[in-house]
Length: 131
Image (cartoon, rainbow, N blue to C red; front, side):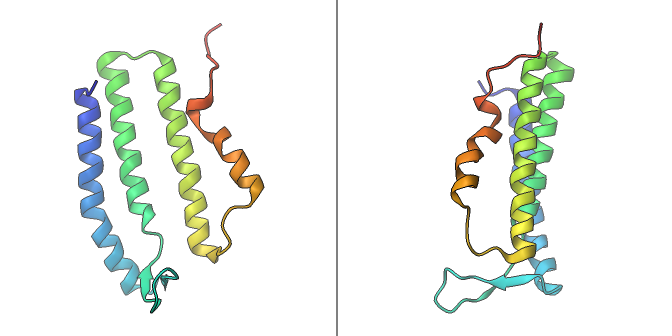
């Protein structure tokens, strides 16, 4: 069910991304924070770390939605924990992506990283904080 808080979070995430991404592209290009697009034939230079404004916008949307749940609906702590776990997962993925852009990994994930990635998902947890 789509609630007011969810709709507000999604709308603000979209607006912040729509406004922030072109500004990030312009700023990164101006400051020389570019890399080669290895998937294109001519390998043009493209701005790096374009996921950063998307990540920040998504985090803002998540936090607004969680605040709505907590302060307007007095949501149970299990919903809060699930939301915060989703935020932690997004942050981990964002940090890995930022390190990839800064260091320049070109190899991809190894078998250990691929096999352990499902464990970072908050949706695989069945535990509760209640006694």
